[in-house]
Length: 294
Image 1 (cartoon, helix red, strand yellow):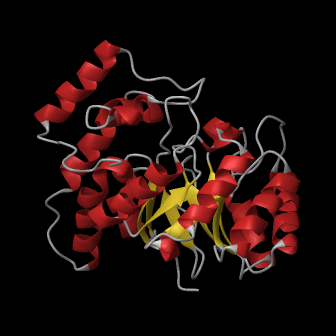
Image 2 (cartoon, one colour):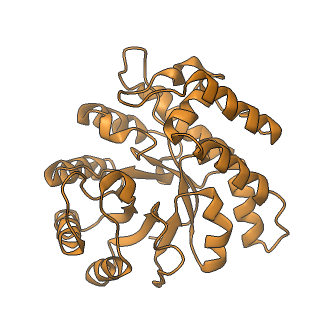
């Protein structure tokens, strides 16, 4: 498998008014982000409210996603608190020929590097043909990968542990492993990360910044002058003043009201916060354009 690199969005999930997962529109949303410039998307990440979606709905989406015109461009998020459920969901995805996974370690209980290595070791041994991107996000799961832990996992499983999404930002400046993808979780880290040898990004706000992010990435690869990085970072900063999931759904709902539907305890922004976000984006002349769930 070639190294995972480029611009990836942590894709949003689309829900019906009864809060069931809208399979068709979630797939269409992911496809449109790729059409806008992303090299691929991560399905069932934090932005997709993955921990709140039922296993049965995830399996239904995977079946539909396997028919997508961009099937080879998806990372499947399968990190669950239950080891067996993680393995079972990966097995379903693998049966549909998905083999690239984004896996956050279990949340709630406290543990360290030794236990994290044991968790991923069991996953790899159960599915040795899988390619795994580690998900480093202490804020959500309570555990933060150390450089030493990542290095040990890659040493043990060089064919399976192929990258890390770094949303804790303690790895991307210092972790150096050959043929290994380090992908920060923010557009504000894209250019600096590329300069340091990172492979790209996986971010929530690439749901709306796909074109801008791709321009910054392509200009870096092609050694062109950077003309869009400043506005890209400013857009990211505008969104991250708020809960990113709430901000994205609130923003998107102006183009399609179905994005107003989120799973509790996630909520939309208060109206005054939404208006503040829109005001800041308007100052940047940033609009959503035609990206809709359709």
